[in-house]
Amino acid sequence: MQPKSPSILECPVGRAVETVGEWWSILILRDAFQGSTRFDEFERNLGIAPNILSRRLAHLTKTGMFVRRRYHERPPRYEYLLTDKARDFFPVIATLLAWGNKHLAPKGESILLANRGDRRPLDPVVVDAAGMQPITLANAVVIAGPGASRLMRRRLTTLKAMNPAVAPAGD
Image (cartoon, rainbow, N blue to C red):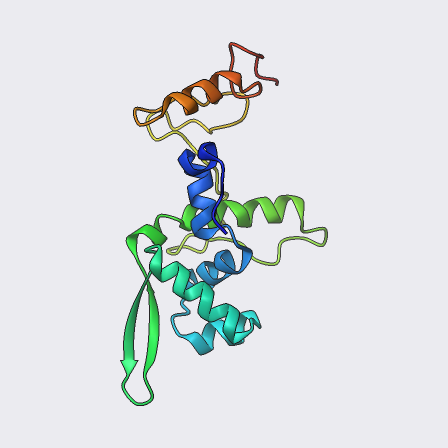
């Protein structure tokens, strides 16, 4: 289903959710980051119905997250390889993992992200590339980008929590 609101269609978060927001898609990408490439691997690891998996893989391929490559002629079998666009999504998965461990693991973390070289556990945070400071709700605001429409610019001026002119950021 396509979103109807122009503010959602123009918003990068809205477009991202349109691409990967369905929960099966995020889990498929998670498994791809862990090495799964074939239909039967995704189906077995996720316990997902074949018809749903087919639709999600087709969508992720159509939106440029996977490239589909034939690995067997008869019967035809395909593998799904991560694109650069998908690899750029990995920090989102890492941040979801950290958030889930912090807020949804009452018995402790069942999975940790670790440094590939020395297996030291990593603590993912989102930082500004220029200043290397964490990006938080308290220090970030949303401003119009060069491609923002008049409607989007008007909408952004009405935001409360993200607009310092309307309401100051909390602690």
